[in-house]
Image (cartoon, rainbow, N blue to C red; front, side, top):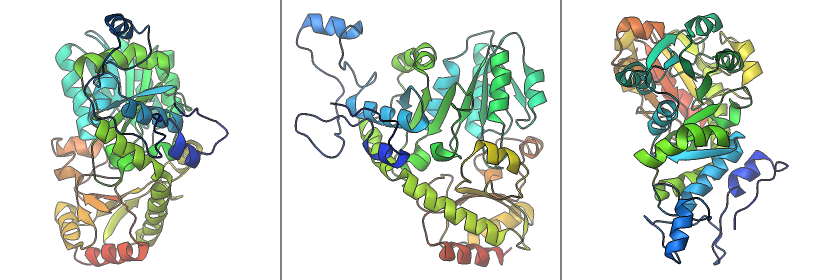
Length: 396
């Protein structure tokens, strides 16, 4: 039996209970169904199952009870009709974009994308005859001017990785829909707690569940969320036939992560806000960018579009790459890693890691200087984090 969604329940309650499917044994925790396939009572039953004329499961690459629970809970959290889980966040982005286009189509995307996301639209899709135009995401006129008769899909992430620029989702969605195109939003940095792209007009939302949703460095996962019509028309068949499926074990881990998502992200955000305020005027920083501060260049849009700040801070350390490396190597509590959204605070240097394949000129267009350090704030005590950051900045 599956628990029904109740819109009257608060988000924290739905994160614990929604999508629960219990076996006749009545277990408390979600059941982990580690199985490749399923058996049928008869050949006729198998035929009906494959024709979608009979409810049930046939193969875990297509669907699985544990994966279904994760998909249903994420859909409830996002306010989506349905969702499809994938093996990683990049599998989700790739499937969402590839499923929408064919040779001769055109995609418009924001320049300020995670390096792998930009590779999908800028390098991968053109191999199959899909053209791409990259635009300054915060400039609505740039989106409008990029539209062609062949434009089928828009892609953006906001806040952007790692410069934390904010894109007007509603504004871009209106332009996409006027052109007969769809809008896909990578919502990882905002988390589903602080930003609801579907409510703002987006057609599809993607997540690397590896980040805040797991949030404890345990496993990979991704998910694509949208209307039933969108998922079935654009995504379902691609996933079914190509197989970027999540393992039931990872889906189970992510389900358990969702139970504490709001507690973790709220604490991380509070820590991030404290650190941003404490370090903003530090003499060893060229700049500090944080979506929760009133001095963010797009604070008015943030207030309209987001309900919270972020767990992420961009620190522009004086001295360029050398200064950034001195700072990072002097940290003792905060670790160097290209992951984010973890319970542990982590830093990375985007110019030499996640965005290293881009030229200095392209990185500059994306707002990524050689001094930028991306800080993902964790659950540690805020005073310990501040002491570590302050001490490390003294080494610059």
